[in-house]
Image (tube, rainbow, N blue to C red; front, side, top):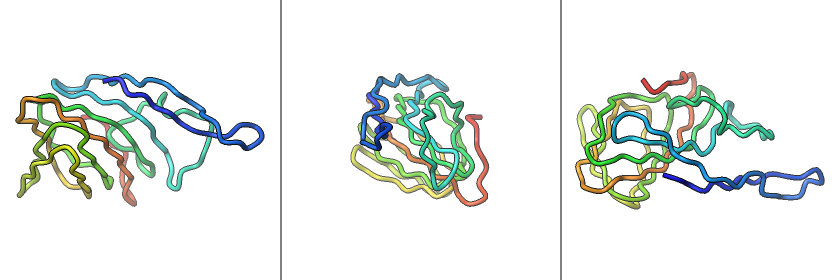
Amino acid sequence: MKIRRVVTGHNEEGKAIVKWDSEIESVPGRPGFSRAEMWATDQLPPKLTDEDPITWEVGTTIANGSVFRIIKFEPGVAGRRHVTDSIDYAIVLSGEIDMLLDEAEVHLKAGDVLIQRATVHDWENRGIEPCVIAFVLIATQGGKSKDWS
């Protein structure tokens, strides 16, 4: 995936400007999975700086911060049962996917919104088309940073 990312900021006179306008290319993960990091913060509430967090090494979540990413799940994506220390806002942009919980399973399709509250889960794309989801993960109080393991 290649996604255009436009980030605003301020010039020396305090006028609103475009700070960054770039194409972000996704990076592969496990088989059938790729992600494009769009933005992150390392504290809440966030502090505005001139640093571009796209250069950070970001795991699944950041303790006391937030992460915004776009993920593509290919059909037959390898499973990864995990939990995050975050409230996750997910918007299915295209395709369909199944989210598996301990005692439930839910089918999501383009346009659906999911609010996930630090629950154990896994994703399965049982369809024939890729599924693309935008995620915003906001750290929970006392939450720990999580890596991709």
